[in-house]
Amino acid sequence: MTGGGGEQVRRLGGLEAEIMDRLWNWGRPATVREVVDDINRIRPVAYTTVMTVADILYRKGMLRREKTGRAWLYEALRSREEYTASLMQQVLGSTEDRQAALQRFVERMSPEDVSVLEAALRAAGHRPAGEVPPEKPS
Amino acid sequence: MSELLYRSGEFALRFHHVLPPLMLAVAAGVILPRFLVRSSWTHRTPRLTLGLWGLLVLVVTASLSLAVMQLFFPVAESHQLSEAAQGCFLTSGRRCVDVMLNDLERPSARAWAGFAAAVCPPLALALAFARQVFDFRRRRARHAEVLGMVGHWRSELGATVLPHTTPAVYCLPGRAPQVVVSEGAVHALTGEQLAAALEHERAHIAGRHHLLAAAASAVGALSRRLPLARLVRDEVPLLLEMVADDRALRRCSRRALAVALYAVAAGQAPHAALAAGGPSALLRMRRILQPPTERPTVPGVALLVLTLAVGLPGLAAVCCSVPAPGM
Picture 1 (cartoon, rainbow over the protein chains, first blue to last red):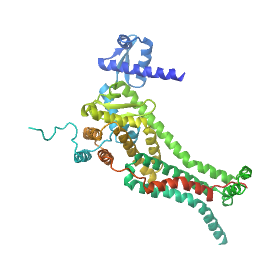
Picture 2: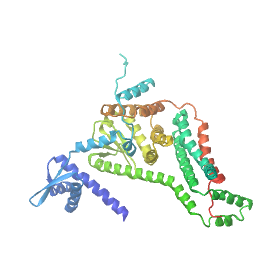
Picture 3: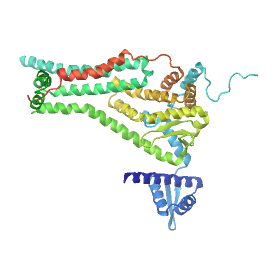
């Protein structure tokens, strides 16, 4: 059933986020058991499910792992900040393709162009955001 | 010598069949786009203008189809559909089916080649569109996957928040659409301004603007020389922004949207080494600030384009182009 499949994919996507979130917060390598135990404090989740998703994340290149004894130790390959920065780079990117794929509120502009925008705003009698009103009753 | 005369005569004969669709293609692909892009009213009525650009693309595609088809058709066969149509009219439709069936009995190989050639322009357009749609979808899926891990949903905003200090507001359209704001934007904008920016993005999603953006990008990718293709690629994204601005303005003040536009642009500027977008944001800004004055009238060139779109391909098809091979 496609609907059920879609639900399954969404659920696994959510689990991916939960696993990454914990590894980022801990900032150290962790076993699947530790992750499962931590998620189980909020909701029940099967050990094998977490193991499968951790393996998917490893294959996607988001986690690295090494074997200690009988268990794998997983660790985030890049920090949360690095992933955020890469997303931001896509949003602020200058190629038209990106602009069309992600619809941005306003395109990237040079400081000179921004000052032209500001002049237009002032000419219409509006103050740019965050500025103190020029005249205050004394 | 007589051979040469004969050949050039034949060329002229065939050429006169290619001429109407070719002229139509030049009008809709070269001349009208330049008028349209220079007209001042187009940005006042972005929806109408989007429709006109779309019509011009359809007219050029259809007339190029007819033109290449004519190149392949044997001259002798080229008048036969008009004759068949004439036959239909003369018998007031009684013998119509009869005539059509007889006419289409045995098309020659060249006629088949003509039909095949006629399919090429619309097929190229459709393939380029499909490619863009899938390409955009792939990029967005990759983006959304990482976003799902680093961003968090804020239900009071109805948006995903990205933990980054640079202000940014954008949307990921498609089957699971979402609006995204950075923490920088949440801090830089007041509640009203943020609501205006989010409303603008929701307008993109509701209007399925990503499909039109993909179409414009596909047309632009097909040809660099044709003015229509180049102008569609540049103008359609801007018009889509204007449509989204207009829709946002139904729910927020002009002032809030204008200041939000400025504040996000200003916050991004220090990070914009290769910025390329100034003029279109300024056009939008002026448009947002300018209170609506008079009701825009439908201008002459719009009517002209509409007439062309509706009338001429039909005319070209009936009077001198499509043959019914094998009569």
